Image (tube, rainbow, N blue to C red; front, top):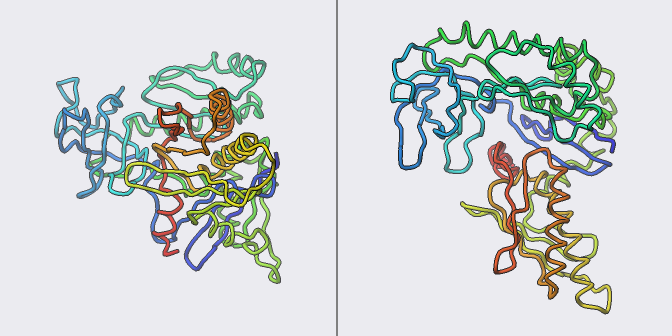
Length: 397
């Protein structure tokens, strides 16, 4: 699968970061020049209060900016001031990382498990184990284990990413040392900073997206803005030198980059409530405060004389498109899908299994949980960034 990442200004002051898979838009993130995301930033936070009935603490990371911290998430915290009690109490100052942006009326979430991301590795402070991507093949995992087991790990854990399959021992060791330098800075120097200090600012969102791309499938990175081109080139030379040749500056003034990839049309479709399928059936995607509801309709589909076979084909097509829309619109949390009713229970099970297989391709953790008694399929997807709809609203689109 050949992937292309397009980074361009889709409107004045509005940057679009889009991933195309086999010619179709699979992901789209919008951001303004003025407003930067807090996601991934590390702060010296101060515990304002602890709410025992919801097993959470609220941590202030800037003047008046409170963040949600689940108490079960407080593992191996890095405190910036000496303390006598082991448990978290009001007034404690500690390092926290923003793990989820503010979503609708909910405050941002933070974690004490600081993650330092590289292309091949992730160093984590809250889990002192070594984990390997489930997408690594058995022989690659064995090769990587033989390398990693010789490293002297600090009081931290390590995640070996899928991209590590493309790296030799020297590349892995260089990245590990770079992550260790960041870790030492946080544990030896940042702990002396005052409350509300931002001790580590995350990369620009589009650079983080590039870093997280699968190297084996990323064919090219294209931008038409010289300034962005220079920023991306410098980043690649520093963090991903083997991918520098994938970067291209698009310079055809007769046909703008966003027009070549029909970005505005695809964005408009991704913001619409209705999604037409090739068969003539369609989806209706609606957001509520608590969850997202997706309804599958037969629409204009008239193929086949056997009604149940027709419904089965529509539901299969809808399942595949829904998994694409989850990524494209960045839908998360609880998602309920009302497929067209099927008479055979066996086919409901097959549809659930099909959805589970499709969700394995999602970069974020996503799952098809079950079918409810009313025949609705329950999905969940990890919350991290705002939905595309929320991003568009912030960008004035």
